[in-house]
Figure 1 (cartoon, helix red, strand yellow):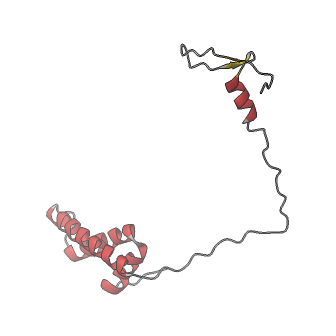
Figure 2 (spheres, rainbow, N blue to C red; figure 1 turned 135 degrees about the vertical axis):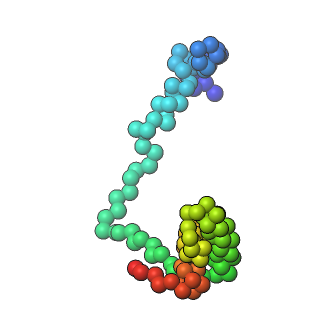
Figure 3 (tube, helix red, strand yellow; figure 1 turned 90 degrees about the vertical axis):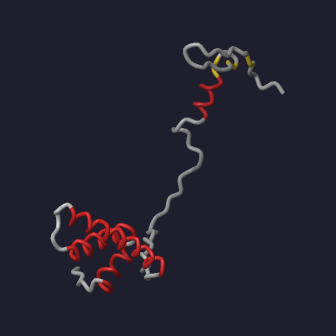
Length: 127
């Protein structure tokens, strides 16, 4: 049907892609006017007296996956400690091994890092 607009094909891509003109005005300009940020699509809903509760964090239990990642951290710790001894950066291989393994385990999985420090290395965790 006739909606009062006449489409004139005047597409050009000289200094920037042009567009179709509709009845003397650009269809792109009309599209921007329709989708302008000032256009309110829905009425705001007033909510008073209702506070959204924050979801509480659920405790994470150690699983075999955490221990699997500790194995990777232990391998990294062994290589890193060996390199530190060879480069003369450390004198105590075991201390370097425990420190590097703990850092690696914490980077992968904090639960695994905790299990590694407290149960494998027997270190106390201070709060």
